[in-house]
View 1: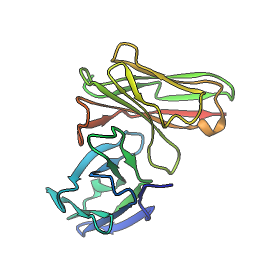
View 2: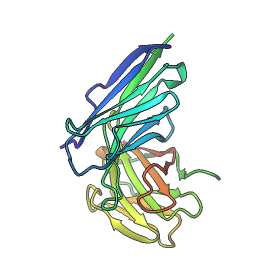
View 3: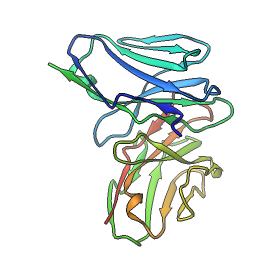
Length: 113
Length: 115
């Protein structure tokens, strides 16, 4: 069973507009959430994270929102740039208990010129 | 090098062949992870080491998969009698300390194709 779900396999957004990537999770024990970005033929790279004690974390053009009651998080990229075209993975873990990170299947983001 | 290094980058194996994939973590990183990423899927956890101790191997799909990190640095993932369903990218990651949250660094992966 998929504990971290990214239901949109792909998303196309016009350059300069906002990109919103969504993620749902089922395990209420998760208390730390991460977003990774992956270019072809490269390993995933860390983008931004959020602890379950917060509902928002912002880093430059990237903001992650967490809605614990809905077990939902989203990544907002604004404004979207051509270099943002990549696969984005939502991930979660249980800090101080499990060391592993559980990943979603990813969403491929295309930024259109 | 500065990052996590994996070798070989690409490996084609005949069904039934044994393969060994190597991971050189970032120097000084005590935690090391192996993940398997099939085409169109997200990375799936295989196993985790804290120094030389394998603390979690719950993700290894079968007893054909074996991982070791004998001196707490370089790690090897071995797959015996490879099968077509083993075709995937095998990602290694390391972090400086346990429960480091956002500071887990991934290598570029070893792409395994079993024919």
